[in-house]
Image (cartoon, rainbow, N blue to C red; front, side, top):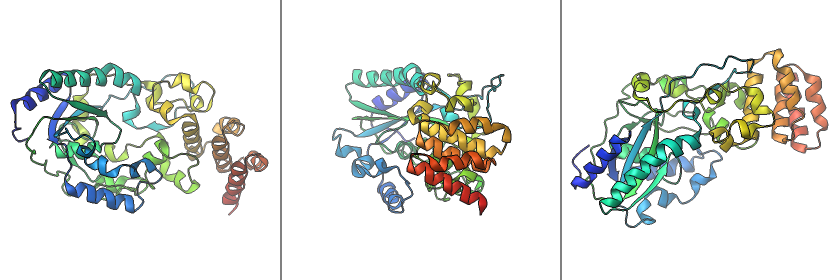
Length: 372
């Protein structure tokens, strides 16, 4: 990063580094090409059903429209290349995969690690006579674009921020501040001729230009999409219960990322969930404070049934049959397709008479698909 306009910026960056962040400064306003690219992405419908991305686009791309005092963005990156915990030694049905970023209880991660450190950085800014407003990993700011603008890394073909030191495994926060800084030099794109992420994406969601089509993305279907997942999308989902890490697993820059993480222990129940617990009562208690709870039981139970169906093992039929009586119509409708795929046409056929019209329709469609 090039020199900033005042010693304050470097002092604050040093405070953040002592607290465990990789930190870098950028101007508060994003370059014009970011907005043009984002507008084109939205116009093409590649945001799928994430309608929130259509709201407040101008402010999203230029925070100074809402916060007139903002002059800079302090980008804070926390590594999340957690070491994978061992699969629990029990009789659980643990056949699916979960994206690494979801292996910790979000509430605990934020409250015990990220929030105190971010508040300490904000306090240092206040003591130096400056203002700050923060966002952590989600919210109205395009965090990856700000991170790329800070010189911390570049947007790779996967659409992820890539760092030579941390790979793609970073949880990002951005603090808008009134500190004046000089625009940093852009980080060179070091993807080179590598296309592993694009070529290995199970659904062809990556477009090769640093963007993706969420309508094809496994992570979108399993973490963001509400309601039923179309039957034609099931094959691409494979055994991903929540999220998808394929593009990150094949990225050469992630080979050194694990060595950077020493501060938080992942939860084995999140990394290797028992699919029975995703379908049974007590879901909220078992997964309290996690991204699973935030997404909701309906979505996770739906995903569990897709994974069970894709596994193709008749031994899982009792679990799928129990889901056919679930109180949630999304779960019952998904169970109808899972039952048909696992060969229990009789159980799927019983759902034709379900009082919910969507469940009845999906049961008929599942049986028709199997027969065709």
